[in-house]
Length: 96
Image (cartoon, rainbow, N blue to C red):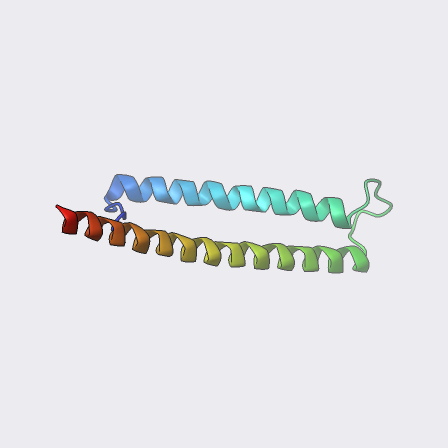
């Protein structure tokens, strides 16, 4: 949209680093959250039980689903903001 920054090699590198940082943070938060929810603090066996594995699987699926839905909503809101800004700019230019 109107506020897009041209992606020269330096900007592309920065975008890639930020994306990696965000994905790493998402993974860390998801792991911590699902582990607290699904795995007891004191282990009796070294491997996950079937119940723990199912709980982890469902937790991760829900976490990623919510993350995807939030991403879509934020993209939609950003697009709407861009449209409002363009209309305001057009109105301001019309008044000049």
